[in-house]
Image 1: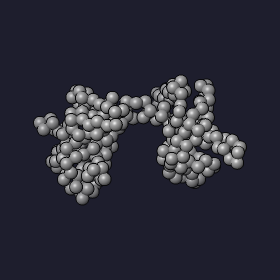
Image 2: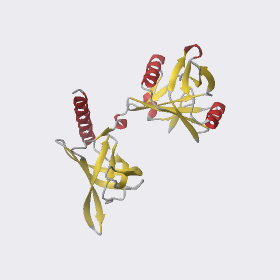
Image 3: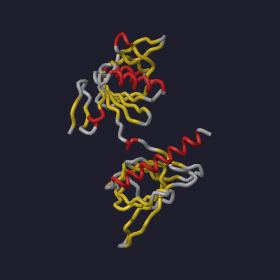
Length: 253
């Protein structure tokens, strides 16, 4: 099911829990996005077209948000003619999205820019599943996937590139598993150092080819955890927290 905000932003029931209405909080969030020069995607024409941009300033007199123009003049022209916009970005690894009405082309500090209205509300997805962290290169995390072959259950081992509480990115250097989008594996073993082995299902959501530094071509696959126990999800969170703490320790040296 879905609902809609006053500005016409179509959202799911799950997303509605993360809807922000406070003007102060919205302003603080948008200034943070601008400060970090976060990449912004503006979808228009029913989502069939988009430009990549960033926030360059604010226009308080017109309650406006100023966005840099895209590099394609034809796309910029069609964006200016579109009545409904969907704007998405990330802030501190959290997904943010809001809707906008027609973008007006203006001059800002001697440069052309788009002005859209500051949103009355926006979605900031604060779910921990969105936070992903790269695993250790020195001590790579391994995932063993059970493959029933000719009546025998065999375990294929792949490397975990990054992990979140919602899933993992896997790389199969030996092409031992058919990690194609839509494929599911009911039994997978994920051994977390000092936290034990987690048994979970995995569903492949996306896959693309990558070339490693040694020139070897292999698949990188984003997978979603299926049927994971909440206690195991908490262990994954503990592992992520430990990785993050170790990264901060290294950066602080």
